[in-house]
Figure 1 (cartoon, rainbow, N blue to C red):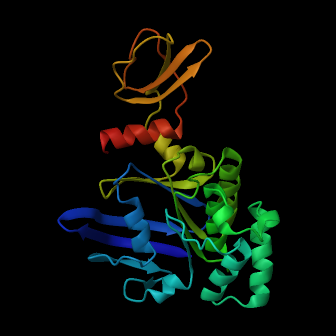
Figure 2: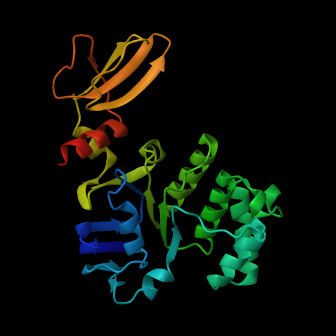
Length: 287
């Protein structure tokens, strides 16, 4: 499948939220959408999902303009918003049966699909427990299972790993990466590590504009020889945090990574860039 976004703009009140967005997206690899709070990520996802209608531009799914014909997207879509909807008095099985019915999935297919998804997300032993008794992370997994019911061809997930422990996060991103082979999968996140190992395409959004779209390798090339690391004493007060991509306390002191075209101090050594470094660099520079 192919998703083409052409000159899409959207305002709320007097504020321009999406500014002439152009993207070509297709199946074959997970698409990571990153950017700071207020960048317009959720608005872009809701527009692609036909929840919002752009004031300008077109969105084509396999050649059909879904702004004019939203049903084309809706019958192909699995969408997980930031706030996962759930009914506390239902069990996961009952909730997924309800979602399957809304999607028009037959009872026989739903039964098999639900069992597979509950197993995949380590919920099979809690299938008859009320959602009210679940942790936030467990409810999040049920929400992702609901998103994947019926094998949707377009999968859009907005911050899917919120509240999940590290093992759960690995499970979610591996499942999504596997599905991205023959589905369009867009994952929006603030946690760069969630997409660093699995994304084949990165979109960087800031203030409603696309700063970068391309491979992770292409983004990393932008900061080649521009990432430095040095160690400071544990008790040292850090006054300068500009262009600092990470601070980690270790046995020998505080390890500080800095994005800079030149050596920031005498102790700094050039290190291999990470996606987090590259993301910070492009967001700080704005180009």
